[in-house]
Length: 57
Image (cartoon, rainbow, N blue to C red; front, side, top):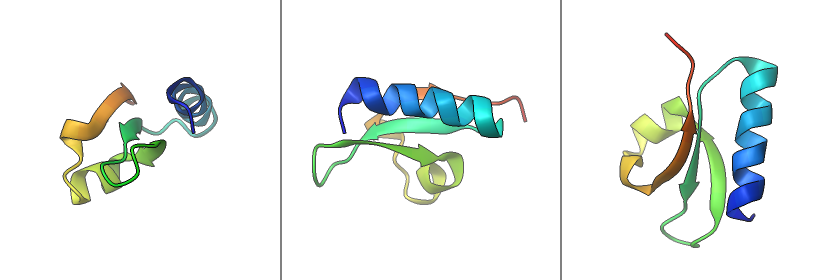
């Protein structure tokens, strides 16, 4: 998906679910995708994050 679409999707998911979401540029496919905090931390994807919207834990 495009970068802007992924960012818009992350914002919508955040509003609907009140959870943290991150947009990353997938290192394998160069595509942008939305992931949750647990996946980001589990797979150590910090360096691929291009946008984040987070809740206060």
